Image (tube, rainbow, N blue to C red; front, side, top):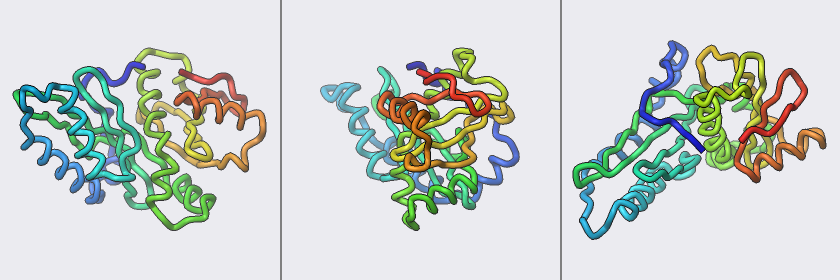
Length: 228
């Protein structure tokens, strides 16, 4: 799977800026991770792989259930993290890589990669019958990988990411609906539907996509195919 080849962000629009600025929790966690990783030194015998595993443990400890997905590449590791801000769940990416005998961290919580809007967030709490934010974060863990796949498809020019198409992204026991408009160039979810409320035809596709770690590309109300 191809992912972001550099650290260039999506455009930070005004709505995203309003969302992220009050998100003190994710800002504080990102700063804490950055400070710890920046201070760490890599012993030569440790090697790059072991150093990255050490970074994984630091990030996992700091973010907990807010860490949705970890993607390890040869020289860099991406972390997909989430936070609840003003009733919406925002998704951002952090990354680390060995550099100059230490760990270079790119933990920038001000770059919004995806938004699960207020309606979709409310549906998650309502349909999961919970008031526990950690439970919601565990539910949307598969969505972290889904956003990476979305950007990989968009960067490759895949026809699945076009105006007017809907994308269905599986979660642990349901799926998020993402009507792609291209306005922000990112996947923003507008509602969440549980497996128990999903028709048998689409449910089969959602379950298959969940197992494969991919998303479903659709147009109007007709599901076309599962997108790698």
